[in-house]
Length: 434
Ligand SMILES: [Fe+2]
Image (cartoon, rainbow, N blue to C red; front, side, top):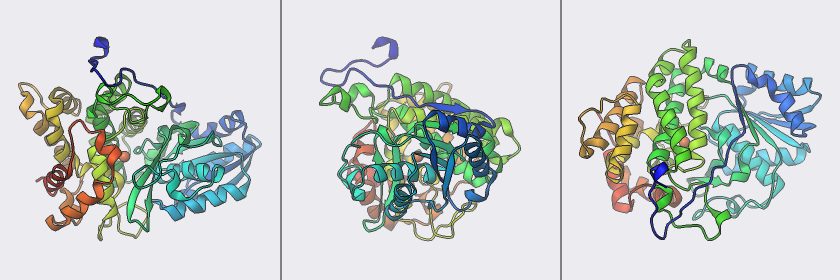
């Protein structure tokens, strides 16, 4: 594997798989929804969105396109921001009772994830934990194909349109978990960067840092040549570790963010920047859906799940929440400071792509340089100063560690061993940065 810079290691996997996403990207492409839905054989479409987006032109454009193509449309506008097991179940009930033969989601990660889950649980009904990742759920495989799903993202963040991942809160267990299977990945995605025009700065910033971490965690994940081979070739996981395909998307994403993140946050009229952020979000989604994230995302589920009374600007909810991208990036300087020792050159390359001055920097400083660059981007875009900035205190660290420790799949994808003590020092290092 010299050509791909991945050296083989005895006893570990020697191949990687590329599961491609079928996407259309460009200004105005939401108007293509009707033709794409017809092409997929849809005749009666379930259109899922949230109550705020339901009032926007984005949903109207998609609905009009579907109707113009001669399709019947049934709208479900009750998707919950930060979905739960109950909100997933409600959406699945809608899909089952609406007798639709295809789904279209218009919204951010919450809407797309809910639509994936509603598709899954309506076609193959089961208790919620059946398909949830182990150890919290059973991690059962998806039995077969689902209904076609066209995802139309309206934020430049999650990349959910390109992934087979759906994240939810299991309320009784007070834990955020994921369902991961390539069968739940949307059949097609229509990515219209014009949707970013009206996004508030705080949403662009948080979403942008989610993208940044998808790319950074994908690029620095344990290489696929350091993962044990699957029991059968077809069981190779989507989170297969860093690989040449994911590296392409990750590095280009980081380069785009280095150029455009601050511009796109500060100026909603900067169309060039906002369109670039939308493209970066999709590229990073394609990358990490073939490699997996690691520690900063594992920690983020604890940060979001144990929120006290932090209420962010710009989000359509009065409930306490830490937006996903924010809950991730608050951990990431601390994480990359530590993981740099596994592969300093990758960490330094990432820092350079994000705009850091890397000349004359030795391997021993790679982690600090990358962490410093992330921190300067956080400061330039109004992010809180670490976990204390969203209400956590040193006494909260043990609880955060226990909760993050449940995310075994993500932690195992990190380039270094992350045990209980390591998690403790990572959370302590994330309490404040400046
Ligand atoms: Fe994410």
